[in-house]
Length: 234
Image 1 (cartoon, rainbow, N blue to C red):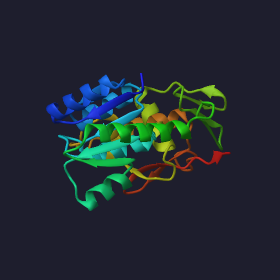
Image 2: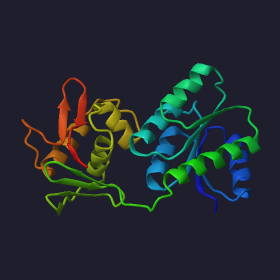
Image 3: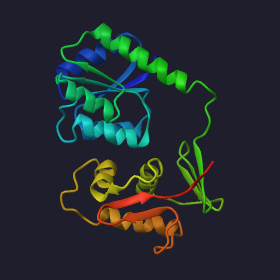
């Protein structure tokens, strides 16, 4: 197998053509028809590259790329009917690695995939090391194993608490709105502006033994949401 790919495309005919062609070339290929489905599938499985359309129902391709970039550097190839320069610039700025316009040539898509995978593998060709970050205050996070420790004692985090800690810690000092956090974790719009995120952040802070008046790890960004402020130890 040359690699595992995820196609996020709402046009079933285009998705079928791409999937069949790439599978015949030796790739394992899965398909999601919406941005929300694509994000959920991405979180459940390990992929080597994503092929993303921009105009998707629900979460659009730009939002999907951004959500993935918050937690991963996996290569992303955008394939879209939008061919204006501003669309391409926006896609690349938001985290995509390459941009192909429709209609496209299958051999060209294959060549771009090969190029992106070569570059990605070259960047990660050194011995695979566990991604462990250590922070002042006794916090350690092993992102590969999905484990967190406080003063060498493993924290018993729920899946939601782990997801919150991951997105915040991988984007230090960046303030996230409650809406962004909710949509990233639950893959749906926070229409009711509920206090769901507030409750889960409180539970996470309790497990991190945070002093609400003088937090070491998760700070409230007033009027916005939350940010990770942990000082990383090199």
